[in-house]
Length: 378
Image (cartoon, rainbow, N blue to C red; front, side, top):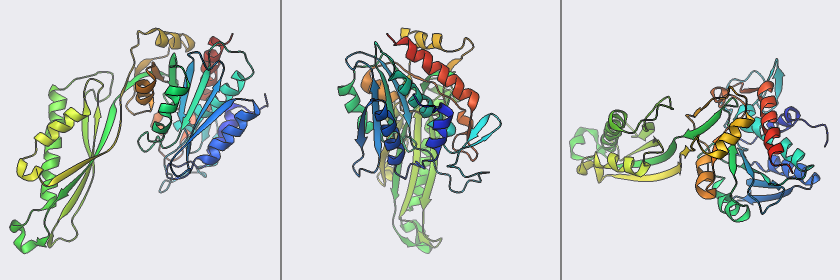
């Protein structure tokens, strides 16, 4: 193996601007070429425009149940943020490496790629897989294109590790999320005659009232999970746009809202409550579209696979829930395998200017993945 390290590889990965609205192919093709130098099997799964790709790499016997490592290649935008140094040029200060994606989540990708290279030099009794996706940051969109291929290509893994930033603590659960866009329709007219027309913003206000009511019901009467900072399912309005001028009755108002639900709750059932809470005279003027959704994650701490992962981590490692979403629930649903979330870096610095990951965190991840690799070595 060459002298490339996880830290050195992270520098290279940060240099690829893989903001979600851009292509990730340069990064994917770089990793593909690196893997092929080590005779690692690589498959690419492209989007319809052939501008982005998921990557699946495998080392070891494909006919056995193995370990799946998962990470996304895209990052959030840096426009409008004040960075101390160029966001796509990794910079080390003290014990940290700064740059967009260092924590979320190219730090883990660097460690995972290096583990795959090491795996290629060993004889394995079980396979090690690495799946790298695109467009995770905009709703776990890209990975959906490779899920069926995964299910038909590999034996259901004994464990999937999603390397989102958890400070190398072990997370077993997160909420699911469903995004809706409501088009509230009205009738244009002169504001001097406003009562003669349906006001789209007034219609939207009735929707928002119902959202607030359902949120209160969920808070007071819904399922509770004390493992979360907010222990109940939540309803949130994130954006409202409507009206053209003060003296015109608006004919359109668009409301974007989301439901983040516990595993015990069903987003469609919550949505039905929201619709039922709007009076019929207003409801008939609302057209609601489901824009995106991803399932929650819930893995039992008592299963053998989780206990196995615990043994590879330091004794003081905590087990808990995370507040942000991952692709983990999608893997769990399609591959029917246990999923844990564990990776280097702090989600608190993700999506912010001067994002960073501690080198010590990368070292801890390397140690963890090395132990994982040794557990499937012949």
